[in-house]
Image (tube, rainbow, N blue to C red; front, top):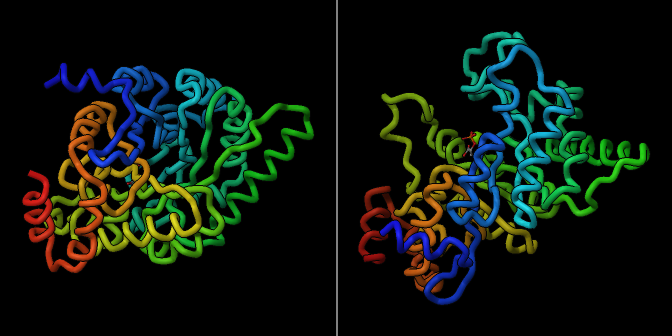
Length: 322
Ligand code: PEP
Ligand code: MG
């Protein structure tokens, strides 16, 4: 089977009915890029930059960040690299920032909320990204966006730093797409409004599921509620995809669900454009997608979304994809 997969390493990802999708990888470190290329990744769909900030005693400098981003972009060449700005808080803490403990860290001061309050830290990261942008195909996304105002604020800071660098005479790429993660239900529901202003969406199902089902993704006792194929989740996913396509924007998914063999047929039918997963899942996913018809899967959408339970959804997908 491994040999079969390897043959598809440099092939585009085509469905049985000749529709193309993109299979990208999630990474946490520049060293991960070799594995992405070896496994036939067509891009990086999520570069989690937290790891640059973790396991040390102080914030990473602009230079340290620039070196990391440049190295990833150079190695990926023309292939798109979606870098997520700092998503700290929740389960990821930074000792040296000494933030007060919170009763509900996952509902608290994290990610873009932290960055908009700590603008200096945010600006340093954006400058490093902008300076590295000339070395490849960079796209930037903001995590945990709950309101359009947050996106506008973050985007304005990005544009301001871009202008500052240009004024200083530093080269930056002119065509950097700026998008958001859709991982909060308010954003999934109001996706049509967001779609007019963002360049792309990436659906973060790891968080979207926990917030939609009100079930902590780390808590074993409520793990039975953590249901990726629940009709509520599929309905939100469809809403986001339709909203993006209405505005001619693309949509990816970078939560674990994107690499899940049961979810893939459903996501294909719902019209997902980019699937970002761990590098080792890419070739199995490409093999699976080559055997699926997008049009056939899309013909099941209405039925799938009207289902009552996760079990019904799973049974239906299994039945239709043997
Ligand atoms: C997500 O929430 O789906 C996601 C990809 O981000 P993280 O797992 O880093 O929260
Ligand atoms: Mg998340």
